[in-house]
Length: 583
Ligand SMILES: Nc1ncnc2c1ncn2[C@@H]1O[C@H](COP(=O)(O)OP(=O)(O)OP(=O)(O)O)[C@@H](O)[C@H]1O
Image 1 (tube, rainbow, N blue to C red):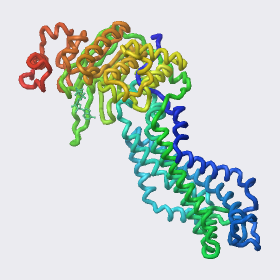
Image 2 (cartoon, rainbow, N blue to C red):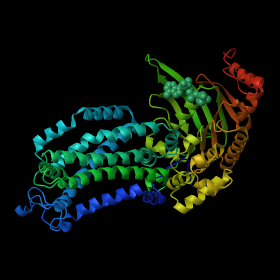
Image 3 (cartoon, protein in one colour):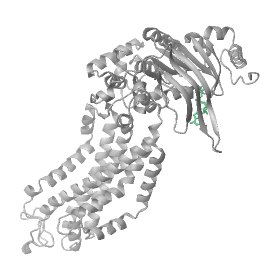
C-alpha cells in the first residue's frame, strides 16, 4: 500500500478567506465592529486618553454641563464624566470577557462531551445544567457577595457559571443532532479519533449558535454588571458604567444629560454585540474550507495490519448481535453468522430488508449503536477484531478496511467541499503535502469516472449529483488501497444506468487493487453481476452460502428458492418470500 489514503472527511473548519470580506461588506457588522473597537481602545488607553483623574472631585465643577472644561460634563462630585466613562469601559470589557470565558469553557466543553458520547455524561451534564438553571441567579450572586465581599471579578466568574447552561443546552442539542449522522459514522470508519471527529466535524455545527450565544452572554454580562453596580452592590472605589448611572439618577432633575452617557455606553455596546454576532454568523455559515493540519505521526500513519493469516482475508465466526427488548429479553438480529471473504473476492450478502445484513457489516466495522451486545469472532488479515483496542481498530479502519455507505449524500459533510473531504484524509494517512494530496485527489476523481475532476473538487456536496457523490465516496474509500472494502448497498440510491456504471467501477477497482469486497445488497442482479460468492441471510441467520454460479444454478435452501421465484416472477425481489420458504 504505497499510495495515499482514505475515504472520509477530516477537515478543519476555519473561516475561508472570503468570510472576512463578507463580514466587512455588511454595514451593520462594520458599524458594530467599529463601536466595539472604540470601546476596546478606550479601555486599553483609558489612562492616556482621560483628560482628568477619574476619581478626582472638584467642588467648583459639581454637575457642570458639557463644555470646554469637561467635554461630557461633570458628575455630582465634580468628577469628569468622560474620564470616568473611559476607565469604566476597562471594567466592563474585562468583566464581560471573564463571564464569557467561564460560561463558554464550562458550557461548550460539557455540551460537546455530553452530546457526542451520550450515556452517563449526558445524564450528568443535563442534570447539573438543570440544577444551575433552577438556581435564582441574583440570589446566588448576592449570597456569594455576602461571603467573598464586593469583588466584581468573583461576581462575574460566578455569573459565568450561572450562564454556562445556555452554552451547554445549545451545544448539546446541536451535537446530539449530528452524532449519529452518517458522515460522522463515515469519519469513524475512516479511522479518525474521537477528538479529531469532534474538532473537525462536530464543532462546525456548534460554531454558529455558539457565536450568537457568545454575543448574547456578553451583552447579558455587561447588563448584569451595570445592574449590580447601579444598585450599589459593586466595588464603590472603581468607576463603572452602572455606578455612573446611579450618580446620574441621583441628579436626574438638575443634570439630566449626565444620564445619557453611561446609558448610551451600556445600550450601544449590548446592541453592537448582538449585531456583530449576526453578521459573523452570516459570514461564517456560508463557507468553510480545510485548514492546514498538523502532521501527527502517531495519528496519521496507520500501523500496518498483522500479516496475513491464510487465504481468507476476513473470517467471521458465530457472530451474534442482540438488542434488549423493553421486557428485558434479548432479540438476536444477527444469529450465529459465519462467513469469509478471500483476497480479490467479492462476497455478496443478500437477503430481504431487516434480515441483518447491515448489522453484520457494522459489526465488522464496530459501528453498532450503544445498546448492541455482540459475541463471536471476526478475524481480519490475521488480527482478531473483537476486543481489539479502539486505537488499533481506528488505525485499521482508516487504512486497511474501507466502507462505502448506502446513501452517498448523507455521508458527505455538507459544510466542506468535495476536494477538502478527499484531501485531508489523504494527508492524514499518508503524510502528503497539500499540493501532493490535491493531485492525488484529482487523480482519484478522474479514476472513478468524474468528468470534470477540477470542478467537482471545488464543489460542495449539494452541487453534485447522487451518482457523482457515490463515485466521490468510492474514490475516498479506495484512496488508501484497502485490503477489504465493505460496500452497503452502494447502488441502491442510484438510477439504473448509474448503477451499472458504479458496478463496473467497483469491478475494475477490485481487479486493479486485488481487494476483498463484502457487498451488502438485496438485489440478485447485483450479485449475479459482481459477486464470486454469496451468503443468503434471513432473520439474522445465513441460510445458504456458496459460489454464485452454483447457487444460482441449484439453490438448496427453500428460502433462496423462494427469493429466486420472487425475482423471476416480478423481475424484482418481491416482499417477504416467507410463505413456503421455511425449511
Ligand atoms: N439499534 C437497534 N436496536 C434494535 N434493533 C435494531 C437496531 N438496529 C437495527 N435493528 C434491527 O436489526 C434488524 C436487522 O437490521 P439491518 O439493518 O441489519 O437489516 P438489513 O438486512 O440491512 O435491512 P435493509 O436491507 O433494509 O437495510 C432489523 O430488524 C432492525 O429492526
